[in-house]
Structures are given as C-alpha cells and as structure tokens.
Length: 344
Image 1: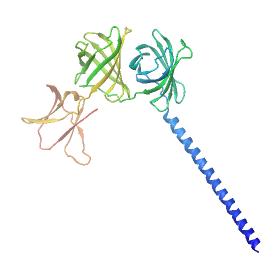
Image 2 (image 1 turned 90 degrees about the horizontal axis):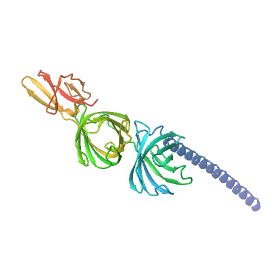
Image 3 (image 1 turned 90 degrees about the vertical axis):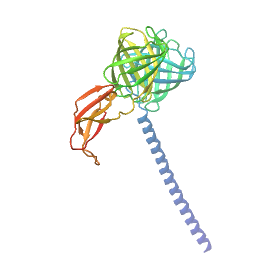
Image 4 (image 1 turned 60 degrees about the horizontal axis):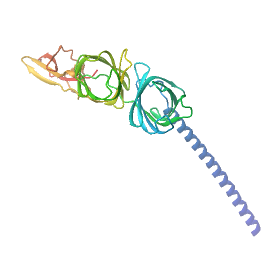
C-alpha cells in the first residue's frame, strides 16, 4: 500500500511538473511574442520618425566630422547652405581644417530614411553625400568622390528647422559674415534694419561695412526659411538673401546677386520687436487710440463688454501715422469701449 501511495504521489508530482512546464512554456512563448511585438512596434515608430525630406532647398545642414581619409578634412565641422532660389550652394567652415567651397547641388530622396546630396564643387569635382536619417532632422553621413576612389568622410549631421517669421517689420538683424566671393566681402559684420512700415531698410555697418539704404521685400518661403529681395544704394539691384533659421531668431544667410557668380555666407541674429502697446487719449470730443507703427498692419478690434467670450468686432478706423505711431480717431459716445490689436 505504501508503494501504491508512493506511486500515486509520484504520478501527482509528474503531473504537477508537466503542468508547470506547460505553464512556463506558454508564458515564455507569450513573453517572446510580446517582446517581438514591442520590437516591431519600436521599429515601426523608428521608421516612421526617420523620414528623409523630399527637399532641402533653403535649409542648412550642420556636418560634424568623425573620421576621414585624404583628401577630406578629418576633423572639425561645417555647414552646407543649399540655395532656396536656385541650385547653388555654399559651404561655411565652423571649426577644424574645413574650407570654403561653392558650386551647384542636387538632392534626391532615395529611401524612407535615406537621401543623396550631390555637390559639384568648383575646383574639386563631384562629391556625393549619402545621408541616413535616424529621425526627421538628424542622422549620419558618408562623403565620397570619384576623383579619389575609396576615400570617405564620415560623421553626423543636423538639418536645421527653426521657425521663420511671417514678416520682419521693425526687426533688427545682426549679420556676421563668414565667407564670400567677389563682388561681396568675405568678412565683417553689419546690421540690417527694416523700417516699421513699408519697404525701406537701412544697413548700419559694424565692422568692415559702410552704411547704405534701399528697398526690400520679404517672403516666408517654407516653415524654416525666408527670402529677402532687395535693391541697395551701394551694391545695386537683383540681390537676394536666403535666411535659414536654426531657431526663431538665429540662423544662416546665403547672399547672391543676379548675373554674378559671387556669394556671401553669414550667420544672423534677430531682435524681434516686443508686442505693441495701445495708448488711449482724449482730444476735445474725440478718442485717439494709437500704437507703434511697426504694427501698422495689425487689425484694431473693439467691444463694449468684457465677458467670458467678448464680442470683438473690427473697429474699422480711419488711420494716420505721426511720429512713429499709428493713430485711430473715434467720436466720444455714451457707451464704454475696449480695444485690442490682432496680428494678421
């Protein structure tokens, strides 16, 4: 009987062991499936985020060198400025043994997370830069050239994507030149000062630049780029400054002139005017509402009550400017009224 009990206990033990084995096997299988699912999900997210752009027109690439063979620089960093106006580009050295270059470029998206940038460099020949994106704005690169088979330069890159403003009225833009080719200066600094209204500007020389004046137009060309077209009292007409924004107030400049092979590269820093402040004054039987003229394109609205959702309406004033301010005049009536400015 004791043997029978032992045998029964053994069978129960074997049954438990088999059940436990099946339990852990099932859980292990489930865990492996979960891990595979998570890995696939992360891969999908990575692939979704590592999307190479269709174009780099007007956008600055910062290249940081990690290794290279002759004839490429083996250390340092530089910026590539593809033009947003045509297929020209310029290279701006920022550190190490890198050098200035310019020429024509081409760009092609070659895969979901890859692209190829071709540079036809003056005095060097064709260069191919293979870009592999780890996210939408950065990754690794490899430079090759048919002129030196087997030679490469490798490193990491960052594609800047700062936010360009919709207008630059009243801004102060300090420009520091990093390179240039005739007829433009290759060094120095100046301040570009668009008027608060209209199309006039002034250039205030800081180092190596004379003062000048002229007229300009500005357009936001992409989310991160802007274009200034201008005619200058000293340099002449057909000038274009491409602004590529690293942040909302800093970035790089590529200056060109129609019919000229020259160029100028620079970095810039903008000082943005603060928000306009409304002043209200009484004059005889009228109310005069005024604000700085750099905000002349703002819309004046009014309401008779400040509730949770005020019923703001266009004030439709007759406007004039005087001593750097925009003036809106209204007759005095019995109803109280509140005013605000809206940026278009």
